[in-house]
Image (tube, rainbow, N blue to C red; front, side, top):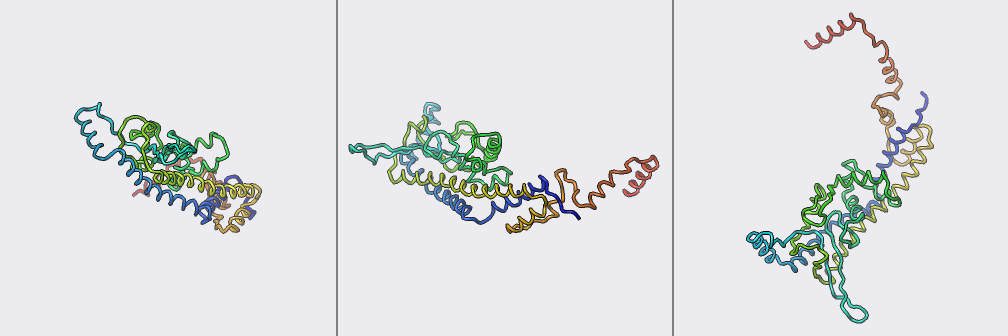
Length: 323
């Protein structure tokens, strides 16, 4: 039997199998990414507990309850309590060269898509964090959570936009009143955000209500936000290593003329590939590579014209089979 020649479909099947192995190998880069994600969880737990303490110090629970009672009694004029998941925290413990107090403040957003740079507005880094954090869940939904990392050096393009949009949709990203409890996030994004809403007094934007904290508390909020950025960085590093391997893999597979060469490569990489499985079906789902199957398929295409008598006999045999 002659060797099976490579074609685009076989190359793609081999590539995907080997790439899957690359993504699941216990490498140092993957381990650092997983550790960074675990640390994010730890930081969210401690930072959100601290945020609750700081916010309730400025907006005591009893005052919030009283204002809600007034709202029930007097209606809209007393509607001054709202829930939020992002806050301007500020401290005045630093001084300049003239020993004058310096206010240090920044915007801290506890939402899944919250910015990582202190801006109160949305930022791509927040989306990068979201896809890195929920990587396995997005892969299970047949999305590409590595798209930002893969396209890190490229400008926006249709390919990138397509996969980013699919990821954001799967996460439940919504457009609307982003920093309030009336935003349009659903699904995973909404479930992620819900635990971090706190009661604040005042209906204006959070920029106008900087909440006082100590320098030490402020540092802990920064540590939490840095942990989010570190997850994005570790994800990028890990995917970079996979991309470099995949680039070389594509070059090699493109040069191979026969399937046996690709299987030998997989074997050398420690990946067991079943040749029969690879060649079993083509893109139409028909079994054609096995000679006997191909012959049967071709023979079945012949003598399709039936006489009237043959049709009557076939019908009779069918009816008898039902009895």
